[in-house]
Length: 397
Figure 1 (cartoon, one colour):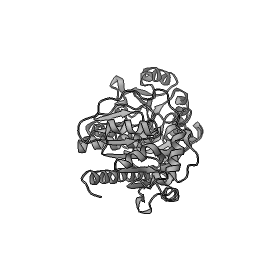
Figure 2 (cartoon, rainbow, N blue to C red; figure 1 turned 90 degrees about the vertical axis):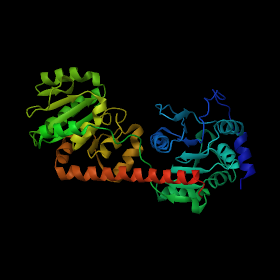
Figure 3 (cartoon, helix red, strand yellow; figure 1 turned 180 degrees about the vertical axis):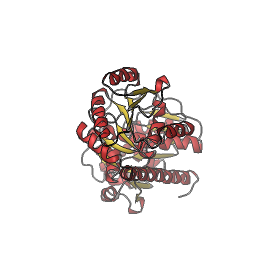
């Protein structure tokens, strides 16, 4: 199956890396699933999958990624193995995974060859395009094909991705277009009793939410609010700063500028005369997404990218406004943009105009509905991946 020459040439080009050969934590007892996310943008869907495997199937999970990520119960977090025969053997000898899932399309021929020789079933999910490690890129005779044909299934994000894998040499029967998996933790909790109480207090008032606003964006948000108030006199702005500790300072500043302000931290309510309601508890994002038909994602106008996951408001029915800075959420915005599920703005002035347009209930509802469709599609894809994993674990082909 393999091209001995291509794999040999590839392995000859291996460079030893700093920190290589570091001790590994003990392997969890029982059956183990290995998930690999080759980049930051693929960590979230693999974490979401890992969480479900642990919580629903009681299976320990090994998650490898080249970036640091928050701990997850039942999940062992590790850097990926160096792609060399020696390291691949040591890695697989230690972890002995029953199945391996690779995300995206980054190929690790030495690891995949060794896993294939051990008959470890391999799946490629969220597959976009096959490629070797950047530092190992080059032409190796037959190597891409020999790596791709080892996969039991290659689940491509779209037809263009599927064509790239077929062209790379994957078995035609293994490639399927399924779409992208769901992101982690997008449906945030929120107390229904609290939501209902605030909804009654707000009655039919129009509301928008500025989520995780950076200090550089505070004035732009106020300008947008002032502009939108010209057309919607009862409009309420709910605001959480990227730094919740700034809540009291912001309240004092806004009041000095003539705004009618209330603070959640002071147990104040958004009474009819209040124009700006400042919240400060990150645990309540889910509550505000549920209450506000429109959400502006802070960090996307003048920051390095949104400070919150765009899928959070999408999952809870809030239409999304965002600036040009997409940061690591770029792939998510591409998905939402393709579904016409967001509204992008380039400046504070644009933000005010866009907000005014989205305050029309039908327009916000169209965006929210489209965004919800993207979230539901991702959940269905993840469910399909779980079904495949369970079938393999049960000995089905």
